[in-house]
Image (tube, rainbow, N blue to C red; front, side, top):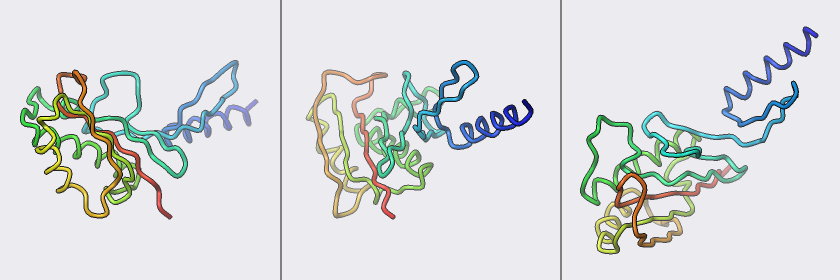
Length: 158
């Protein structure tokens, strides 16, 4: 019995340290090998993880300037909102030991294509050539009243 308790204790420590999601059913630990990454700089506005490790790739959830943990003061301009999105995204990547150079795909959501040029200027500052693949679409609205949301996929290069 003591060996089982010690084993469960070690499993729980492993889960907490590596932030792996798990389910406990009738004293059995079932580990769903989903490693997640979080940052203290951003909040979550729903039931999702900041980033999920999927083997060779890390998928980072969309971030808006409104996700930043602040004191009620939010970026208003598209330029400032875009910079804040990248600040949050890059901090999450850092938690996964990745950098902007590891990003292979970017999805940008704007509330108006009139914001495209401002967003694109910041995008060019935050990435270097060769640039990641990118999709940019206009949507009716975004969570938390944001005008820009950006998500990325990064590859773990060995």
